[in-house]
Amino acid sequence: MSSSLFSVPEIAPERLPDLLRSMPKAELHIHIEGSLEPELIFALAQRNGVVLPYASVEALRSAYAFSNLQSFLDIYYAGASVLMQEQDFYDMAYAYFVKAAQDKVLHTELFFDPQTHTARGVSMDTVVKGLHRACVAAQAELGVSASLIMCFLRHLSEEDAFETLEQALPYRDLIIGIGLDSGEVGNPPEKFARVFARCRALGFHLVAHAGEEGPPAYVWTALDLLKVERVDHGVQSSKDSALMQRLAKDRIALTVCPLSNLKLCVFPDLASHNLRQLLDAGLAATVNSDDPAYFGGYINDNFTQTFAATGLTAQHAYELGRNSFDASFIDASAKRLYIDQLKQAFEGFR
Ligand code: HPA
Ligand code: ZN
Image (cartoon, rainbow, N blue to C red; front, top):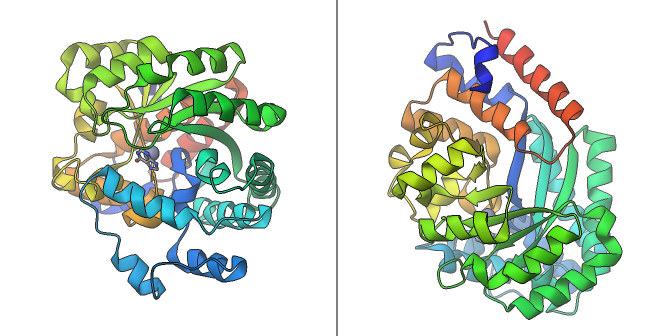
């Protein structure tokens, strides 16, 4: 394995949380609309004259009790309805970048869901310009590099995805990749095979949510029909040993989101999470926050709580940090620089 060239120092378990918090990392699975904290939802609702079906920040937050993915998506799309102006998208993304910088995220690739906004009459121009302006500010003011991945909503039609792609083409240079999210079961990857082929021809990087709640078969078709470079979630892959071998052999990264899986009842508790099984089988797993405002934590909360619950080690921490940079869509020289910084952080912990 790649980490064999670097000998990870022994680190006492009680020092692991500090190591996890201070180690350089990339975040590759964050829906920017899922970073909208209830306080910002209320502030934007007031700014834009949007009436929310919740009386207070506390009432909204207390509605965050989910039984599965769909129960979350219903509230998540309602929360996003306060986003109207370019400045709203900027403010949302910048608030996330501040948290990311505190968590030692050096690079992040943000998902955004344009159809959630264009369906309400908010233009693609408003969405992309606001988010892009925040990405530029994150680099200049916080030292966080950031790029954008546009997701198609899989509960909508392929035709709608094609239209969304057309609307995005004027902003082609501001978007590095294409993803697929929303309700998974009943909306398999093959529904989007043609639009993903078009995106591939256009030179976009490709990712898709698969194997979050859906079966291993959806991970196979994401790989073989959509030709994705990373799988978002992918935790159901452990039910299929041939798939596990394929993912390990091709070093297909899984962007795992443990607190999301906990809150959406994919696993009954964090101790039962299969992150360790994925890593120990040689898969390029990473740790991410998914929708941090809804799932009770940003990326470092995901790291520290999962390590505490499952007994992962400093060796696993290094692999996760390294995988996050290796699996990112930055160029090889930037990857080397980040991975050098990761190694230095571990050396400093000796
Ligand atoms: N799964 C699918 N769609 C999503 C998610 C998720 O975890 N978060 C935001 N949209
Ligand atoms: Zn997600």
